[in-house]
Image 1 (cartoon, helix red, strand yellow):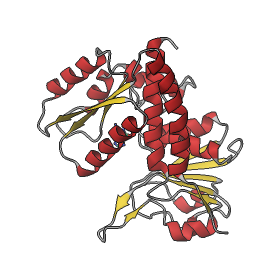
Image 2 (cartoon, rainbow, N blue to C red):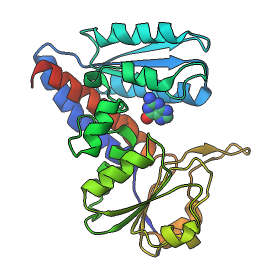
Image 3 (cartoon, rainbow, N blue to C red):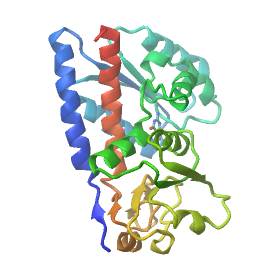
Image 4 (tube, rainbow, N blue to C red):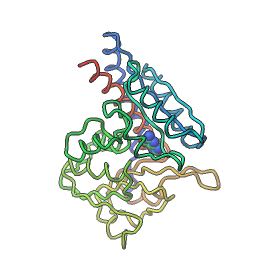
Length: 284
Ligand code: GUN
């Protein structure tokens, strides 16, 4: 079998059109949805992500602003900046790009963001809402994956879904969203014994480990849907996912490429959440 490609760029574009339309309705009422992104330090990958987030907002006609803080900024200064943005009428979404430098307590920082402006969905309130089936802001990357599965009409009910990786940003919320759709979900970690015995049962396999090409074709069930959340730069300069694309494509029926798969979806959901937040603020 040669897998069909799930084109994240195309699906993200379709999603953006929908949200552009909703943003225009808000603008007709005099409300311009606004996103503030805070970035601390010079992590090159974070800089690229933030630039893409700001660019996506501009493309949909939203207001966006980037707040750059030096690597040695104090936690107090960062919290003060968040507090200001919590009270700004121009801002409906606040995002603090992770990772933060080691001297800053990221839990404290994420909890300082008003849950009503937490467009990443990382605040405990929003995580609790997600875990109890009352989602307020869909977590960007996992919800982006759900949008891809929906767009491609991939059935989830009663299916075996295996998530490899248990991060708070991707693995855990991903498992919850799949569970909400009545999939039977297994979460695997780097310590899972005989990983292949789990992955090769999966009808839907989502991989978010940060380990380049660790999932190979022999670990995949014939006809599975494979979603690769990873993006890794190899020493030779190539960008690869957590799945070995060539061998996985021989076994899967659907697969996401890297780049051009999950990445654009994360940003599309962030834009959607910012518009959603502005709608809530306006009472729509
Ligand atoms: N760093 C890597 N992914 C993300 C994300 O989705 N949100 C934030 N805030 N930081 C990240």
